[in-house]
Length: 216
Image: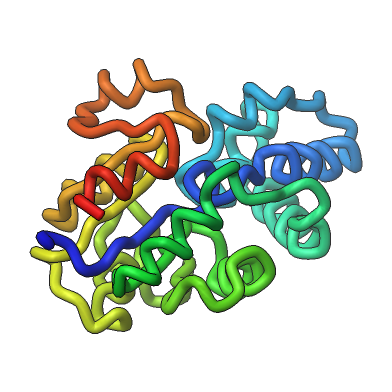
């Protein structure tokens, strides 16, 4: 077996969290009487962390101080409402269970803050993931390699035998920056055509296809 560890992106890969993200963003926009954002707009905004999500959701020309205030309010609100509509994609729980039974080491790396990442993983994937890494002071977010490398160390794995699985161009760039093999999923926040245009080499349409890719 070539791979003995798999690191997953979280939002758009394991969890369908888009509606909770949209609702939380729109709650903050509504407080300041800014225009609301659609689900498809939010889909295009996510992937590079909360600060970029909020910057993109706000109207152009907003001062940095206002952006930071909205970011803090969004973070506080989302922390309390991140489980209202969020759920694992169909087939994900079974996939993680099957990988675990085969002895594959499993981790998650997200651009969400680390406390939220750990909370979501404990809520939706109890006992299924050995490592949950998120944004933390002193480390750069994806697509920088910092947090992927943290996860690899915590998994006691090696880059050569670790596979990265994500759903966006950020994940493609992340894997490239880490010199990791990658698989992209088509059920997440980006269309398959976009992933192909961004250089994705392997794309799967259903979770159980990852088992086939791994030869399990």
